[in-house]
Length: 474
Image (cartoon, rainbow, N blue to C red):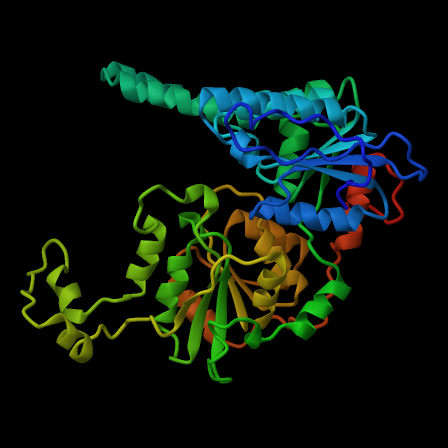
C-alpha cells in the first residue's frame, strides 16, 4: 500500500497561496523500519483514470510482499500545465520528489512521456532530474519512441522551394521526437556508469532496440500483467450482465462484442462498427470507455472522434438525409418529407442505435467485469508504434476470446502467448465480421500463461536489486 502510517510528512508546495489548487500530499517517509524489505519508490500516476495508473496499482499489489513500496502519484494538473508560473511550480514539485526518492533503496519510473509534462523540454528535464536523484533505478518503458535519422533531403527540398515554414517544422518535429527517442536512453546509458540502471520493456523488439541501439546493459522484457490466476477466476465467477444497467435488459440470446479503452482515432473502433453491419441483429457492440479527460475541450459540443463513430453507425440519420448529402459527383436529393414522418417511414436501414452501447468510463473492477461478460473482445487498433496495450493483456488473463488487428504491438504480444489471439488486417471490417461469426480459432479455457504475475514479480525483483525466488523469463 502507499505508505501513510508515518506521522512526519514531507513539506508540500504552498500552491494554495500561489492561487492554484493544492497538489496531492506527498507520501510520508519512514526512517525507522523494523522489517528488512528493500524500500522501493514507484514514480507514476496512481489515482488518475489512465492505463499507467491502473498498471501501477496492480504492480503495487504484486510487489507488496517483496518490497516496502511507496508510490509517488504524479500530479497531472501541475505537470501538464503550460502556464509559465505553473510550470515553475511543477518543476519545484518534481525536485521535491527527487529529494524524497534519494532515501530509498531503489526507484522505478513508469515512463509514459505524457505523464511528466506536455512539452518535450519539460518531459526531458524532469526525467533527467529523477534519474540523477535515484540511488538505483529501473525504468519501465510503456512507449518506445523509434530512433530515426533526420530527413535532410526533404529539409533541403523545402528550403530550395523557399518553403521555410515547412523546413522549420520538419526540423522542430525531428528535434522533439529525437530528444525523447534518443535523448532519454542516452541519459540512461550515461547514468549506468555511476549507478545500477535497468530498463524494463514490454516486447522483444524494444528489448533489441534497447540493447543494440542504445547500449543499455541491463534490460528485461515482459508483457503487461495485471491480475493472477486466482483473481481472474473470482472475476469470471462474479461477472454478470446484471452489473451493467445499460445491457441488463438484453435477451439471453444477445451476443456481446466488446471494445475497450479511451476513445481515440488510433483505437480503430469504427472498424468494428462497420463490421457490425455484416453481423446478425442479435450481435451487440459494447464500448467500454469514454473520451480521455485530457482530450475534453472547452465549449466543444461533442468530441470529433465520438461524432465520427455515431456517424459510422448511422445514429439519428434518416435515409433522405444521407441521400441529400451523398457527396461530390452524386446528384443531391431535395428532402421535403417532414422529419418526424421520415424517421417513422424512412429511418436509415443501417442505423445501429439499438445495437451499439456506450458503457462509459469504468473503475478497474467494472472494466474487468466488462471484459468477462463479453463473448468476444476486439482490439482493432491502428499501427501507431505503441509498445503494449493494457486491455488486451487483461482480456488474455481473463480467458476471453480475443480478435486483434495485425499491429506490431499485438504480434509482439502474441509471441509471449502463442495460439491465443486471432488476427485480422488493420481496417478490414469484412474479415473481422467473418472472424466474429466463425467458431473460435483457439480454446480460451484452461489457459495458464507462461508470463504471469509471478514472472512479472521476478523481473521487478531482479531489476530493483531483490533476489528472485522465481526465474526471470528469457
